[in-house]
Length: 544
Image 1 (cartoon, rainbow, N blue to C red):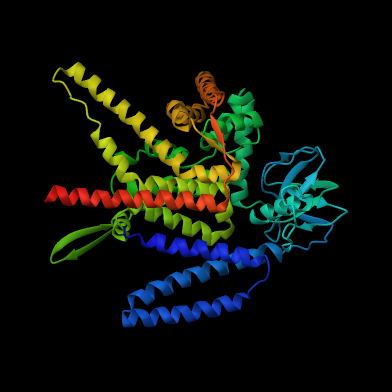
Image 2: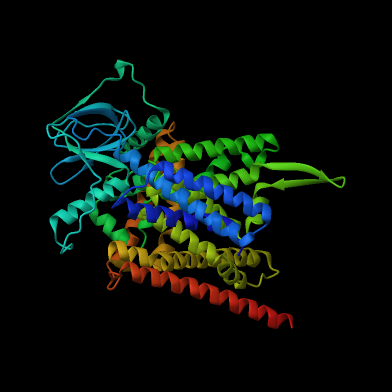
């Protein structure tokens, strides 16, 4: 396949990984990176002029590698150098909902300098997202990034575990932590207005409170909140474990599945398909705006950002049309044609473009588990798309001439294809993500295909019912009736996943090393290449 976007994202990821490992021991000045990039850029211009293709490709990969390393260094400096670590007070806004811990409450504060600080407090005052607060601490701010120190017996050493925890916070962009003795909320009358993104993100709390006021509680209410707002604070540990054992924990995290349904509903509500010309393009632009507003409201998780970028590329491909005349013939060139020209598979190119945009914005996203699982599963679906298409093409039913029987046959074919499609999608995602799941969580769900088939329809119904529930807000009786159906649907999903999770051998325990994970992915890639070789040979024999 000719996939130039992947040729960029691979050296970018390698550069970020190398720079992250390099930061544990020493640092390279940004000026050195800029000088190296200037030299490489001059080399690329010379190679392009001389048409030295191999040298140009290698130089491009080295240029992107160096740029990724520089962005990682810049992100590191942005986190480490903007906080006064020994300060005893700080001002900022609450950027995330309060999270209860064993002996305290966790508050994430975005300071006026733009850095994130994690404050632990025993104060019972409820803080909302967007509140401007003043935090006081006697011990001062403690940096999350510390110099690497090798520790023997790392499995049980307390200092090593604390060092790993602090490094995970550092990779989340949190510059420092503190134990707050008191937190004072600065009233809005002081003239400080929150930014638009903060106001949108605070809608998540308002939506959760609206669910609570409507009587959504328990595990059913927590599931509705997680699937529609992205808030997983009220999810119990038992429910999280249940969905994890059933292999359906991706349902709890907003992703492309949720965003596809939301975008389809927006297309219906905005009457996009009934409009033409610039009116249709304008409505699609409005739909893109709503999509990104929802991403901000949900807290911008990596899986949802990835899906939003790909959805935006799709919408732009439907909007942008360049008209030109060639030999007195009118030709329309669309953006999706450009994606297809980038390679045989435009979808994997758009996926790589989404990864490049996200990694340039925040290189530390590459170390996020959600980012890795999201892109790995989508890459597997892109690689196996032709295999799925062939299997789906084989499914055929004879349509009888008798009209009622013909309708039944068409419906049966749609049901069979839907079940097979869900099964194949779940199987491919499980196959391409189980090494990472085992590496991070130590278990492999064995019943994920079955559980995903069983909850696919209820999950779709839950999202549609939730959207209708919000639309029906002016009519209290109708909203109450829809709310009952919504709760029942959530109960069905919890019941199905609970039944699957309670099965014997629902999960297999495995703790692979990094080498094991790399070998499994190398084997998967080799099998995919072998399939391509056999497919080419079979076509050659058929043509002969």
